[in-house]
Length: 272
Image 1 (spheres, rainbow, N blue to C red):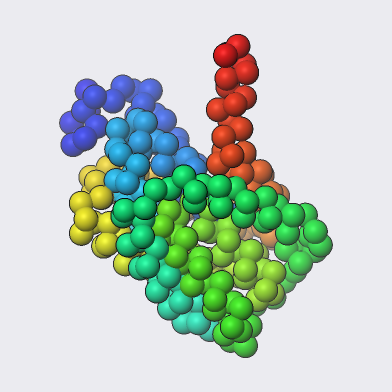
Image 2 (image 1 turned 180 degrees about the vertical axis):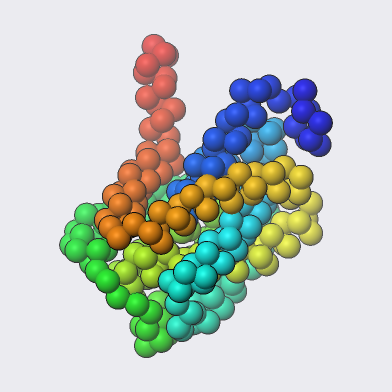
């Protein structure tokens, strides 16, 4: 039906799911994170990519919308680059190591680690919620704190390995340890995730684990979602409050998905 390479067998409904999922993912990734919980199943079960190729292809959806978000924040004057090298370089180093690890390592153990981190993050979100709603900007002193640097190496490793939820972890470190506001943290999140996914993309591509045509198509849909979210983040005064609420929702959904609760619920509902 479709003349797009790799998508010839898709129905109109499948294509609609790709468009809707891509746009929704762009919105979620820009405001919070963990949109890969949507794109990875789409790439695997609708586009027919293997898990490893889907993992590599998914990097295009982080880089291209990320560049769009950075451009929009820069133009609006809301992007703060202060001390960014202390975050970008450690995360890029971690991403390179994580990407090489992902090429040959099984992901099952990592999934349980993700679930544990998501549950921990939910606790962090709910305890002292006022720190997530503060208004503050970047600080070189806070960015170069050893714990912050180490945390970004680990985030980069994790993001290079599988990427799912890495945006949430970036926000948590920046808000809780580096005392950013959510708005300022979102800009730094876009910068670090975009840049550390570049070497990861090249590593996956060098090992034949990137489908460029499908990846670019999905990145286009995600870019539209990122643009919509960016408009909201720049022009809505209470953006911090809404992003905080979205974070809680995404963490709950992410943890339940990784723990297999969705499949368990479906089995119960089907009488299995």
